[in-house]
Image (cartoon, rainbow, N blue to C red; front, side, top):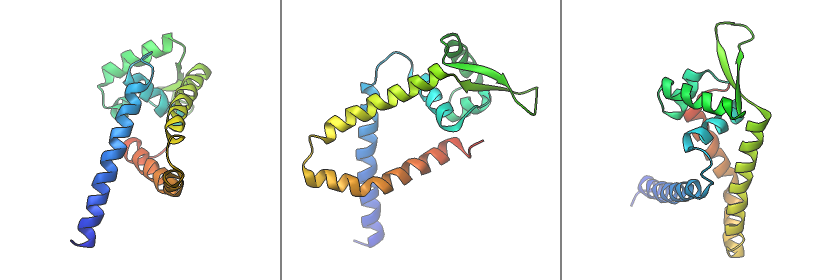
Amino acid sequence: MSRQDATHGASTAIGSVLYGLATRAVRRLPRDMSITSAATLATLHRTGPRRITELAAIEGVTQPAMTVLVRVMEESGLVERRGHASDKRVTLVCLTEAGASYVQARRQAGADAFARLIDELADDEVEALVAALPALAHLAELESQDREGPKR
């Protein structure tokens, strides 16, 4: 087996485990809003204000669907629409304080759930995860750049 084959095999195995963890984590989160709504709030939290068309493209939904979703979140006080500073024709969707608090609370709940699981691992397994933290952080950064494009 070549080094390239071994590397691809490891990438596939790691990808499979990470995907399984992510999907199970999403399923465990509270169902107080749709996954698309929560993802949209998280995108706004990470990237700042965005146009509805950009949000629709990032989240993989149609513009009319995103417009409805934004309206519902606006009525819930999680987002607000603001004019663009340099182009008055443009409306941006912005996270409110309540929206930011929601994202942070949801993220903390997810982190706490993983922390409880990690506490059940053997010391050498925890050390392996600690050693992998830089690579995992870089992986998350690459995924974010690929999905959302450059920050505004």
